[in-house]
Length: 492
Image (tube, rainbow, N blue to C red):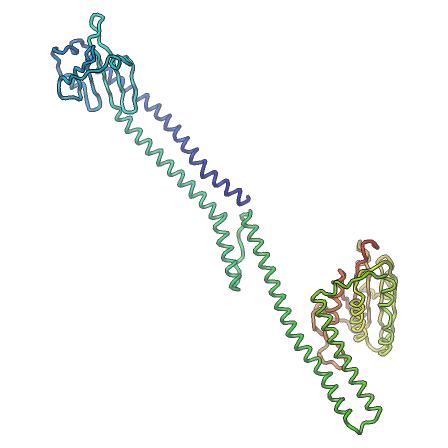
């Protein structure tokens, strides 16, 4: 239930239930009063009738008649009052007055009003009747009987009703308070505790609230926000560690070529060197300088890919022309190690990409493949649309994975770089994509020219093109890198 709905219901309950309970109790006390009133009326009628038997004597209403006031006083009590009037309205006797004659006179209209009627008041019963002698009124008596028991009963019943109503309102308030505590106060305390712990960097207690509504949604949003912030913190911490490691790695990897350049430069200052030796040292210095430039280019490209600035440089190209240009020109590099290079090109359609970035990516991947291909080994390059056949040279263990790419509904172009030689252990395959990770046992392996960013740049570049990259390696065959590039929707 939504919190606002629950609060509205709680407000209506607190407003309406006490009112409904009051009405029910009022009706109940009304029924009890009716029952009690009837019993009280019957009891009062008997008491009044007993007094009336004596008051019917005509001689009681003469001024000079002899009245036995003791008998009249015996009929009265603290609750029963008797008044005798002459036909003219003069008060002859009253049980509540000490003197025999008070000269009190009632008007004829007031005296003769409501005769023979039992007047029921909240505090008393009043009965007024005339007494006749030979057809003429000898006098009028009025009996007033106080309703003491009735008043006491009303008071008790009123106290009971007030007490029950207070108990009901108190119980209702406690119930609503408990529900409010469970629905609102406890989750707010829990959320405050979590936020305070998170702000202080302490362990955040897990949320156990399952009450639903906005509070659970708010707490779930806080958990999601906390996880996002923690992930950002971890990412920032990792980036800082990478920057620190990058500085150390750059210092280490530049130290070797700089040392070589210094040593060769010192040797060039030796006048005893022959022309051939001087040319050789100069070529070595240029090679070391090129290696340093390649490292710095990789570092610059890595920074550009992290900042996503290369996304704005995408253009549409014809896939056949671009892939032909992309795969050519590697024969000289392969021939240095006597590597047999075989290429396959079966593509169609258009691609939207960053040409320079894709060329740099292929340079890194193919350079890695040549570096780890043994002398006299084989290197296979391919660019294949998924509407064509898989190249025959794909190693048998890798064909099922390549088939999965071909069987996907969305058309794409696959770039395949495969070399034979020593396989890459499974436990380090995932780490190859991490920045500055190198598989060699030593970072300064002679002539490697590696800075540990080749596969990292390739992965970042292919992901900026909404593509995928996968590395497969298995003994005794070798390694296959698969890069998938989506074809534009119109072409697909």
